Image (cartoon, rainbow, N blue to C red; front, side, top):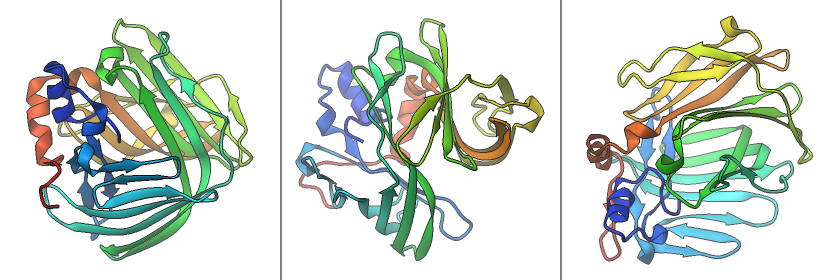
Length: 281
């Protein structure tokens, strides 16, 4: 993340008129499992940022593109539990899509599903972990903070028998709404389709974040597992029905009016510590 959208430090700096995005960067790593759960999102300043057309370095971690694969070299320490996370994640796109899609009416926020159909290989030394399978790579960028344009959104990505699908359902700060639905093939093709009807999901257990999705049949949508239950963000796996077939999807709910409250931002440094240039990692 360059100009980390969920950084409390960046939000505080913007209030003081000193919001240089390159001074608020982080590589987020999240592992889920009984024996290998870990989380890292250490923020670093511009002195620990290097980037060009093929490589991005943030502190001791870096991402590189060699023309056929994105390789993430991870060297992070978790928070609040200080577990070391080290290893590589390689993303091999089947094809790259053409470019960003505008999310909001004012065209200030963009989403680029760079490689919606990819093969992923995970090789971690700490913790010891090997995995390979289907994956997804996208990017978001914007000309203003997310909380200035959105009240909330729900997003999900599902693997289909042929290709994959992504759903966005957004509520803007002015009360307007927009839903997007796209299907992707393995050759870089992108096809919009009519978003399915809304489907209810329960709020998260701890922080009561509202969740919803879209599904061909409302009774087919349910939460399988909640992976992140935070004061403003929830990540889950869900089941639903899309384009006539049952799917399992990664789902996220984002409550931006929660994020911009000061009490939430005071909690975030416990999971998002900051290291500036000259300090030890």
